[in-house]
Length: 248
Image (cartoon, rainbow, N blue to C red; front, side):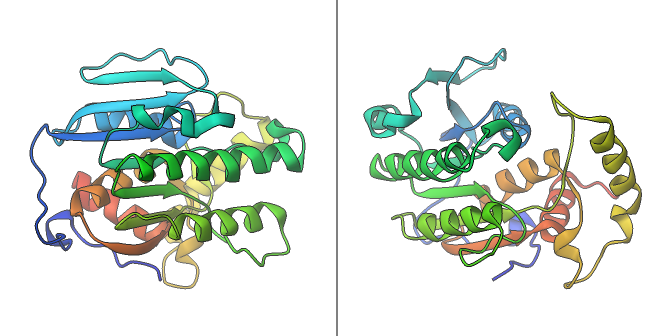
């Protein structure tokens, strides 16, 4: 189901659990990506987290109190299970068909790596998963990209987390390392029309800032809400703005 936008203070708390300032540990996979980069930086500034552990193929040029970086081989994720000691798992791994170069390479990153790291973190004791997926994710989709995302969501739901929160943004807006002229024009256009895309039918196709996706993920993590939830673009936008107190 698509979760309604709830203010963080109104999210249901799991009985027997509480958020203790500066006591939580976050595990981040995919911090070199657009959403993952915002997630990492926002976590480092968030008062709930004492440690933020990033796992990647290379060290990132970022410093912060409580930050730990581990260079890992994603083909052997379970070998790093002992390093995955934390509560909240932020899975932001993903690539594009253009960058991957083939369907097989794309599947390895977007499904295998994402699933195996989440599986290892669950085995290490993590209890809450926050996953970046995509609008249109469907294991029965005719489109390869959407089918892979749908298969990943189904696999993630079967892992032993007490909370699985899946974020399905539409077009992601934000600074990218590589962007063609056509993409730049598309982003400008979508920024201008985004405020007019509202409602349950079209709202899920609303373009959304990558920074807002990160903000909503972290806000939802503080709710300690059990079960399995899916958040579309409009809900992501509303949660992020409720959290920041901004009206855009």
